[in-house]
Each structure stands twice: as C-alpha cells, then as structure tokens.
Amino acid sequence: MQFDSHIERLLAVAVDLVNLVTPGDARGVVYEPPTGEALVVGVADATSGPDRRSQPTQAQALSLVEVVPAVRAVFESAERHDLDAAAATVNELLESTGARPRLDADGTGRHQLHFHGPDDGYVRGWQAGLASGLAVALGSDLGGRLGVCAAPACDRVYVDASRNGTRRFCSPQCQSRVKAAAHRARTR
Ligand SMILES: [Zn+2]
Image 1: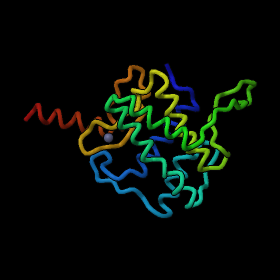
Image 2 (image 1 turned 90 degrees about the horizontal axis):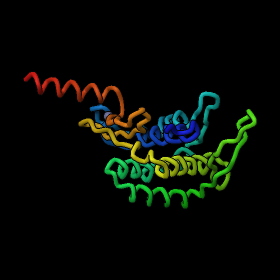
Image 3 (image 1 turned 90 degrees about the vertical axis):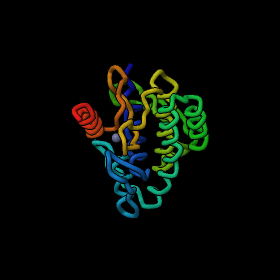
Image 4 (image 1 turned 180 degrees about the vertical axis):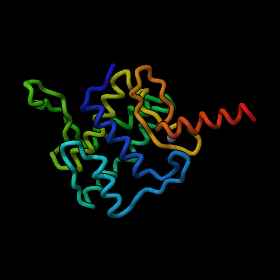
C-alpha cells in the first residue's frame, strides 16, 4: 500500500518541520534549531512545493511551529508502538486545528481528498494539514511507518516509505554510521 501523493507530502512536511525546530542530535552532531530569519526560511522551505514558494511572515512561521511538539510526540509514540497514545495526540490535533476534509478538483476531471483548516490561511491550513496527514497514516496500516532514528546521537524523525517497511534510520548517513560502527566492533 502506498500513501496517496497528498498525504505523502503532508507527512514529508511534518518530518521537515519536526526536524527543523527540535533541538537534540542530528546524524551524530548536536543540533540547535534556527531562530529569527533563519527559522522563517526553514519553515518556508519545508512548506514550499516544486511549483509554489511559501512566503510566511515571521509571525506565521512562529505560529505554525507551535504544533510541532505535538506532531513530534506522534512520531515518538509510533516508534514505541504505542498507537493508542499516537492516536490520542492526533485526535487532539484534529480538534485544535479544526481540520476539515474537502474534495478538490485535480485538473484532470478527478477529485482528491484534501484537508483544510477552518480558513485557508497559511498557519491554520498547514496545521490542519499536518494533523490530517498523521490521521490518515495512523488510521491505515501505515501508522507503524512513522519513526525516530535508531542511530546513536540522532533523534531525527522519518516516514518509512520503503516497500517492506524495515527502515530504522533518518538518513543514509545514519545507516552508514551504524554499519561502520558494527564493522569496527567486529574487526576489533
Ligand atoms: Zn539519524
């Protein structure tokens, strides 16, 4: 089963925003989230598509990322296989963001299920979208595809889109770090 492209995109934005604003460790290096203008650029990058560049104000960027701790909590619960806790957090997010489903024409005569906020403004639209993407993932058999990197000195989140669902790391870098460490341990 594959995520539909809209859901895939919402989950990718969720991953990017969580990894942007969460302090901790990224691929073996201490990570400090950006502030000020750099944060605005990071949020704009995360929410931009190939055909449309987002241009949030600083206030909008700061408001949008207010939901990120809850979004991260969903990945952490899923990583622990605590799907009850993940679902409870997603339900709170759906409620607080006022997410509402809507069929939008895709330009080819078909319609795709999209999720909107209480208004179509940048902040509420994206917050509702993040909540909805997580809801669709958890409501399907794909809830286990949300994860937190298993490599040492890394706490970045990811969505496992692999065919067999066996991904454990946020990035190829973390996968090779762990492989190299295992190789060193074997040859020592
Ligand atoms: Zn990692």
